[in-house]
Length: 383
Image (cartoon, rainbow, N blue to C red):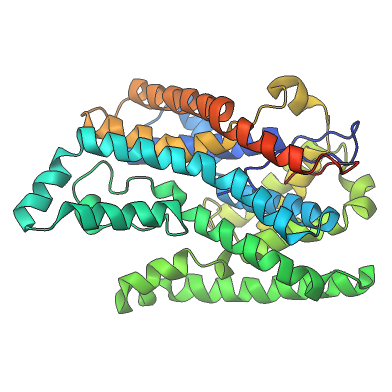
């Protein structure tokens, strides 16, 4: 998902921001609500207040905005496509492949219902597992065989990974969009093209949301492919690109004013939700609230810029939380644990522990390879 999952931007050695902290918040939001929903945990009191608050800050759209901002900035500074591809690969695949092996290991140990179903149906095990494994290590992380869906965990081995193919599609189209929409043209022309493209893409999203039920009735497979297609989500990436391209001119309006923009966003989202009945807890928010959310995210990134460095010490465990929380939730479900706040807390705790291990032993070593390949650049941006 994540790049929504990359290292923080630095325009110089003294220029810091809070993108790591924002990604951590977004990953926690996704994990909090996913674990609660899939393990049927009912909240009250403080945990319910937290849930209601988090629903106004959908993690996936936040990831996509951050990704649009950071990856477009990285490509602008380093247009070499080979370096671009290597950097994207190192950020996504080492940790993803490791989590896939962990998933497969747990499936072997605790997937008795899956193996029994395969034997009873007369289906050969190797082709089913091989197809799933191939999908996971390439670009088909949304692939979910019915025999696994019906017989393991909450219905998907790692359902949150559907955003990975969306992110990968963005990586592919970004070098194509750059010369078409902003590279080598005046600021006015690039803004007209970026805003026009974003509005057009939101119309595509509106059509998708309007007709997705009919599409699902027509073809379940086609509906799945439409859901993991980049087009319904590209307007969020475009918002990030637009804010990145105009950050210098907007800095007086945004930088240092994070709490103000969060308050404005919450006001707009609350009115749209309570007065207009427009759902805010969705992966495809309406364009108005999404615009104010994007402004709040970028403003927070450049408010108290040293906060993320002080709290996280340049560690970024957000990707690990994102790719491991449903693996842990599935294991808890298979072991018969669900429905209580203690199980909920335990699942989140183990998700964080796995994410720390992933960062220390997989992601950070991989990123060191990326940094060494770019060491000759005088300044660094998040990639």
